[in-house]
Image (cartoon, rainbow, N blue to C red; front, top):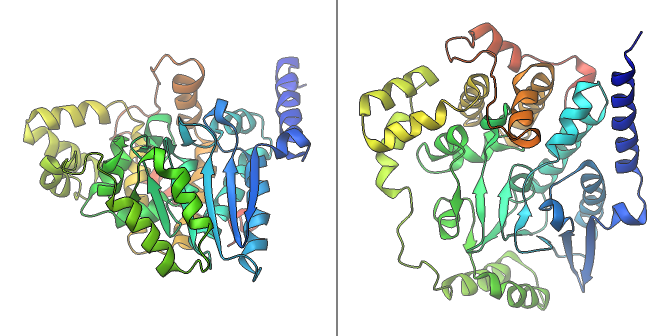
Length: 380
């Protein structure tokens, strides 16, 4: 007999899932859609939740993207968010783990439908522009980084901090992080290092850097373009970018460490990366070691292999791998424990299992990457 506490927990999750799936007036307001002539604007509208992406939002955005892609009356798509704090601070991971604990389908539906949307953005046949003003992490990265244009501001904070919650840099992280010069992507993925403002552009995450106060003018200029071709869009973006004086002469924050990053984080295994950091003995290396020791050993090993594989894979191929990884995370321990420690209890004391790199065996790592049953695989 199922304990009453578990029955009630299941009921709460199911009711939440139904509430998310129901397209009521309130849930529809989580994403707004504006039409300006032949341009379309998606507006994330959960500012109190830092515009965190949930399943309902995905189900609102995706069909619009599909519709506009084949509509000859639509020339470009822009995505932005309400509020100054965040473009999108990530996915609604807490809801996903609560569903995963009781076997609710939300856990698999969220990742599957999110990745399908990420692929649509990455393969979109019309110009797609994301104004990443404010916190842009996890799910927010998936909504932006695969598009043609990503506009950062001085308020932008970019990070992929998933190894700290027992997850991995998903939403196509295995595809775009290896694109960054040298081994910067691997460094950002393993450490969760935060890039801010112009550094987001200098790292190659954003294509342009525009003052936050100029975003309304930028949008107005784009919306007035008689022809929204890539040539005309880029001319507008380049103009606003070149006129931005903020931190214009400031060097990239990681510039002094790029040689070390490229050397140390090019190692084939986590154990070798740790050995190189220990041998370095610099203050910077000590800081990186301290950071890595906080992360899930399983997540770090999964992430390193994910990014190594992603160097030679298409976006579709790596998203299919990442979907397998997401489902393995839901079947394992560290994802639930990381969310508990960081997002629920907030004691910042996760008890990883295993708690050492050596404890993450090749067999366990292979299991994470192993195929799912055919009817559960992600099809793009």
